[in-house]
Picture (cartoon, rainbow, N blue to C red):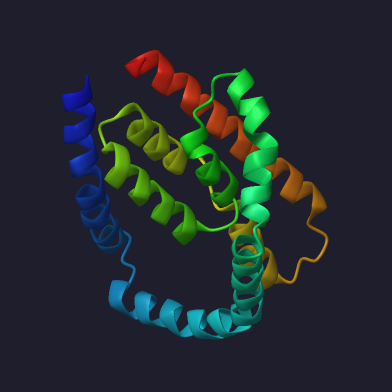
Length: 177
């Protein structure tokens, strides 16, 4: 089963990249002209997003540098110990909704310490793939279209991240023990 999934995953991206221009040609859409027109429209959007991204990066830096991350780690330790959730991936669970780069760096450190094929490596990989950078995504997309009232989206996104993390743990325990 793992070999079939691995084989299919290697084919999916090239298949998508080949399918898009072929489908556009079939629909008589000028691919290159459409691409350059879309790229031109992307620049104003990117410039509009810069203040939101800078604010998010500053908030992430403050979260790490002030010791708030370690505070929450100590706060959550009794809970995670009670349900036998691995302590080693708690920083990933905290950082993932905030920062994709920070959480990826943490996954890399788990790989270096425990190995990618270890239980913790598989759990970190599954958590990384099953959750999203919710706060970053909401900042970028809602900032781009000017939405200011985001409380329900934040709640739903963070709940989805929590469910993704717990489901990752459950699935990795069931598959790899």
